[in-house]
Length: 199
Image (cartoon, rainbow, N blue to C red):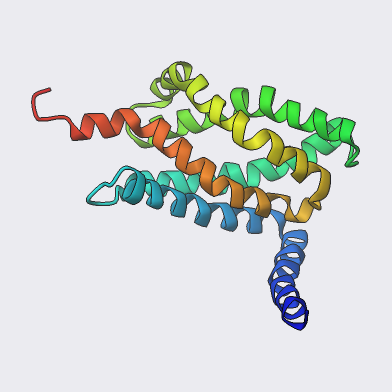
């Protein structure tokens, strides 16, 4: 019992400090959290999932920058400001379901992923239109795992997580999601890079 109490107190201090920082500097904390998470998830994807011999640092920097800017700051605005204006601040199940539906049917497929693919196409030198064309082919490959991973997570997150901790909790789950997205959205590059010369 004493050990569990000590562990709870030990774990609570960083969480309280993160929450206080997030209340005081929501965009800075969201950006830093998601920048680090985006870089780490892409590194794991490149080295463990794709088994690349060398890290593509340009890809990693792009992934980290997008993660900090949009998944941190942009989603702070969407989840904590916009959804609150549209659906109210409450955590009643009806309000939560509206937020989850708006995320799954509007925000992610029509805002977040098109922005990600346009950004990725630009950074990789193909241009934003090429990125959006790629998204038009891969959208369902991205949305199926998104819906299966995020629907129940967001139900719990919008229901039980205070707004100042929401982006931090999303970042934890998003570490896994970004590995999936990084892999799905870079498959063509992996195949092209691994193809024999002249193919």
